[in-house]
Image 1 (tube, rainbow, N blue to C red):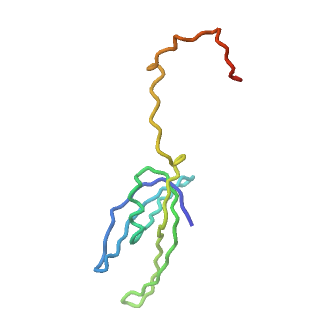
Image 2 (image 1 turned 180 degrees about the vertical axis):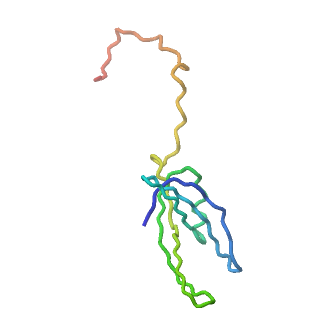
Amino acid sequence: MEIQGKIKLIGETQTFGSNGFRKRELVVTTEEQYPQHIMVEFVQDKTDLLNNYGVGQNVKVNINLRGREWVNPQGETKYFNSIQGWRIENIDSGSSPEMPPMPPADNFEPATNVNEDDHDDLPF
């Protein structure tokens, strides 16, 4: 499964327990009539996938839905769901390096060496 949207928040990597379990949270805001703020967990080595992303970027996140059962000390069974990310990619237009902005047109000198009599073989 996948979700698309704009990054709202990228959390810091958290480490738990003596086994070194790592988790990092990402919040993506979907762009639809009723936007949703979806929290996605990246765990273990996948936490590093978020290092090259920032707030405001449009991304596509591949996810797995996880569910687990837990029995509390009183014997009641509870169920929990989580959304776990395993891949993320930039979907901003072209996702190539941004071109520097063009300078304003009035920063250029007008051409003075134009000869109207020169033959022009351009088809337009």
